[in-house]
Every structure is written in structure tokens, then in C-alpha cells.
Length: 177
Image 1 (spheres, rainbow, N blue to C red):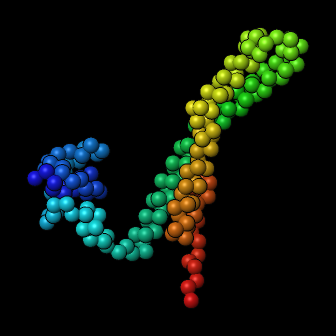
Image 2 (cartoon, rainbow, N blue to C red):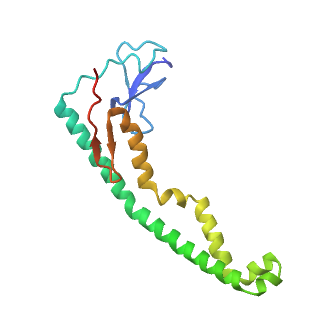
């Protein structure tokens, strides 16, 4: 039965056409046949809704989400600090080399490439800076704030937000009349 619907990934996902007993590529867990799965059935639409959570379970889920978010942002901080230091050092080297390149009287008398050849410190630091920007250093130095901003966008739908460290901020429910 090539078009059977099977549950994979420990019940977290489904796959059409998965063979009985096959292993999921992502988690290595076994796939199982869903009871009464129709061929070509909509996978998401056929599942019953999850059971309602009480407020204690919701609070525990929010705390777990907040812990994971703060842990993830905290783990990004050391790497972000190192990338910022690299960017500062290379920028200062480039600025120093540019200053020496511009105040050199020979720079005005020779061709552009010859003046770059005469100032290897500026040339190397400038190429390094350009390479770092092509490698995405401009995203790496602000990675925690990018993650926090994306989380704020998603959490806004649930009347929540988060600060730059990942702590959740619960907003009051809108008053409906």
C-alpha cells in the first residue's frame, strides 16, 4: 500500500507512503499505521483537536518556553560578543590603514592599484572587512535581537511579548464589550 498514511517521529508528524516499520529520517523512531487512515486523506484535517489544557498546564508550558528561549539567547551571547570584537578590531585596522593611505603623498601620484600595493595593511584589512560582511557578520553581531524580534512578532498574536533576554511579558487581554 504505497499511499498509506503513517505516523512518524514518535507521533509528532505523519508521512504519506511510509512503509510499515520504516524509520523516520529526522528522529530514527519507527513509523506506525494510523487506524482508519483513508488513502489521500488530509493529514492535518483528520486529527481530533488536542484536549483542552487547564491553567496549570498552560503556565508550565509558558515557563518551559520562557526557560528555553532565555537559554537559547544566553547561549548566543558569547559568540555574539566574539563576533562584535572581531568586527571592531577589523574596522579599527581598516580605518587606521585608510588614514595612512590617504595622508601618504605618494597615493596621489601613482595609480590606484599601485597605491594599494604600497599599503598592504590597508588592503588586507579592507579585504578582510568585506569578506566578513559577505560571510554575514552583520547578522551575527545582532543575532540575539533578531531572535527576540521574531519571537515578539509571533507572541503578539497571543497578547504576549518578550524582552531582549527572552523573558516573557504577558499583556492584559483586550477588553471586549
